[in-house]
Length: 413
Image (cartoon, rainbow, N blue to C red; front, side, top):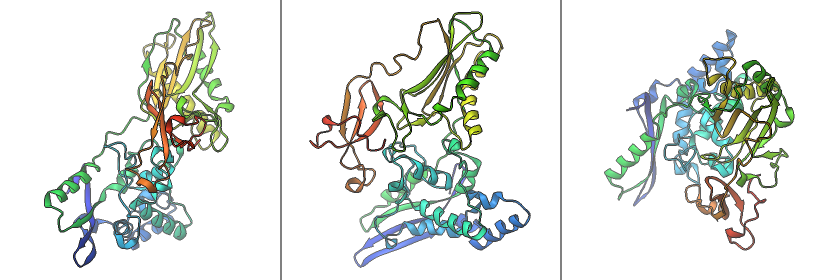
């Protein structure tokens, strides 16, 4: 059976009957098309002898039948408690991808706790264990660390790639606990629900198209590019973390980086009193958590990341002119990049978070992430009524009433 070109390689379940508990793994024909661990070792070592490093350094090339079988074994209750599941990357989203394959496993572990990620969720995800064991084995064997696709932080937001497809071409299904009372209809429902989770979503563009805006003066491209270069080179912004108002907390992250709702600068335009404004702000809808001002492992990567976003705004709008660019906005993840001109004295980004409304809190619902065992159990989830999609998690006040939350006491700053 195939789903969007990917094949079911097997499924695991636990049967609880009158005379005990029994663990089962059924392997389907696609499983037997996978390389064995021995074959994969030979493949990687032969490539190293030819001077090709990508197979030793790329985790997605190292999938094998041993790693797959370990995934299925992790589902069995005989492995231990708590039960190990196939976790979704974001259980709050019905269409969320399963945390399967090295990239999404890595994303799940890197995702913050208040975004339903981190070690708490990774520790109950079968493929996290399977890839951990596989990567450690090949690292020890070759002295090269096998990285997931898009290992650089700047690439993590794209969870669909050719590399990920290589790691997901044969996938497992977990049917859970079965008893004598479990009906055939229930089993079919579980199977179909699992298949739905393996459908490939349309991958997002690396950079979405920019939206035109019409300021009073159209800046010429070369001076605007110089301003973008100046703005992106301001290193005092590089470690700034952009957040919504609800997540401002103490104004600093736990590791000492400064928080801001956004960052902007104004520049002179030759031949006019109008001003060129550049700004990047946290989106006002559909986002949770934070986003850095720029991304990259080196200074050059950070500079290029910033310039590419503003360059998309400048070059993606009004493509029929070089001297009459009117600017625009670009939404990339949770960051909104803006290039615009305004009359002298006008400040286009004032009131970015206006009309917040009431600060509202309720006790965090942890029923989908471990219930009372979850580290978020007994916390408060809060938002401003004007921006109900922007939420964060706060420590429970001494009164045990979420209405008394201290807005500086986030669970994770």
